Image 1: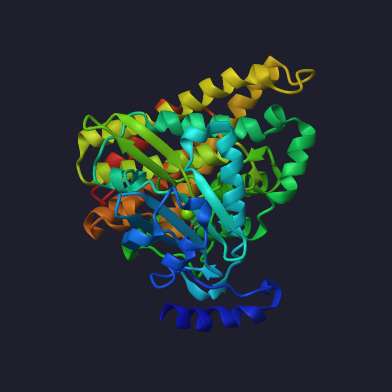
Image 2: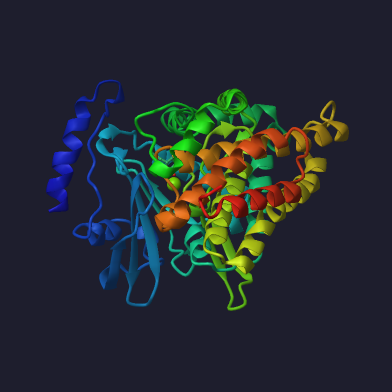
Length: 430
Ligand code: SR1
Ligand code: MG
């Protein structure tokens, strides 16, 4: 049945004007996965295709099919296939599946700098846009863990290490200018960058058709639209996003793009960043800001639910991530390729600017998850009686961060400000 669906779904894309595709390809399904695995002998030691006992589609993102397959010995593999459209919306929004190549290549590049912090990749099928990768089903998606009120101590530190190591390695400082320019060519990702430009930096500031929120939050969304300084700063941040090709970013580093595994005391065993299909050469503060934003969404949830201890834990995550990022960057800086005018004094300016940028990008990412298309379950799964206040807290915090970052960019201080705002708005009456 899935194969029939494939014929119906793929055929129209052959004729879609500027998004024309040069070939059709078969979607993976429960019916064809076994023979697909059998045709890839290079993974015979990873999984026994003759003894598959479990197979489930777990794609909960907005774009792709994701299958986890297990054999009778408990070994597993993940197959991720890019669909030729945006899954969240459906075939009416065509999207090049070449994003799978981007994700594959970026993960390979990132694994050279931080192999222990990304999933292992077994192969990439360029004809069917399939990435075969390590089964991390003994980990959990960090957003899910945070939503449930769980503690994963050490994960933020590892994500900070991941960001610093992969961004340094792919910057002019780590790669050298020639390599940096050459690598940029293969990492051009126009379709997905345009999604971010629209959904993160533009639509939340206009009455766009794709925006939505609870009626009680209309006043908050309108306050954002009418906030002239916020709109001006979004213009500046969007321009940075579009023009400042500092390093090969993950590009969509929210808590749903991080897998965590902890022991019974909540202490880290393993942390992995995955799903880098939005990867491109962009501003270093962007990945950091994405993490801050998602910590603040999780914070709004825990405050709304009265989970005080958990809110305290989440409040420490932005500073933990930043401290780890900065320490790792400082440790790597002496190994930069060109030391002539890229002095230690210049590094001090850079690190300050990256922090200010990261806070600005956080504000953009917080706002988009409340007002624009593609929400975050941290807020969406709250009962409306809690959601109104939590959403208000997130939006007012974004307005505070966008301004305050130019005056005081200390992350712990800013998190305290965010926490105060979210506590004040939590009833939805302020
Ligand atoms: C249409 S894609 C919507 C969102 O999903 C991804 O996770 C990105 O954040 C993107 O903006
Ligand atoms: Mg994703």
